[in-house]
Image (cartoon, rainbow, N blue to C red; front, top):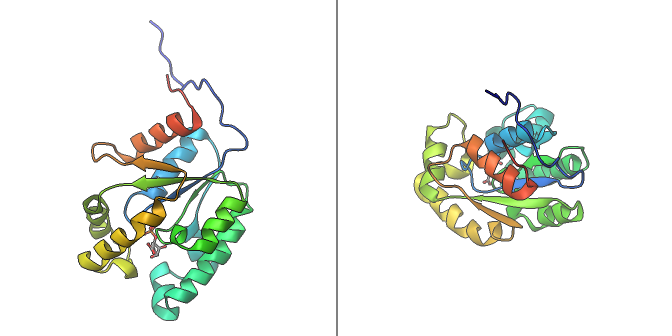
Length: 186
Ligand code: S3P
């Protein structure tokens, strides 16, 4: 009997391919990015986490203390920095891709963008189950309004990856690895 202990990859990740994960709050960008970086054995960064690290306060505190416009400025500056890093996978916060300057920066750095697309109910379930304070999604109707407004901008991403409710984050990451990076898992 032959037991395959390690995953066997038919193709190695192309050195040039770098991806950005975008999508609405609660869709699972950070968790998918984490699984994907393990599967592809490459470096990943999380935009919100880098902002928290450099500002020494939470995203909610920044927005509440300084307002959303200042938060967006901090976000764009931090995005510019992490795009210059060696990370091959970057998870954005849900609003970053909606800013034109950010989309231009991402394009200029030749990232492939992946929209994790799912139903509002799926996102809302995760938002309401999470302990994290999300100032832009404090109640369901505000969150739904934002969700609907943003669909046309998320649509501008290179790839639209539909999150089916039966797939967990690891399975989503595996599908992305297979479909976008042509990985074959034995
Ligand atoms: C935001 C999403 C949040 C965070 C901030 C603003 C947005 O990130 O960046 O609260 O505008 O959608 P998540 O998508 O990780 O919740």
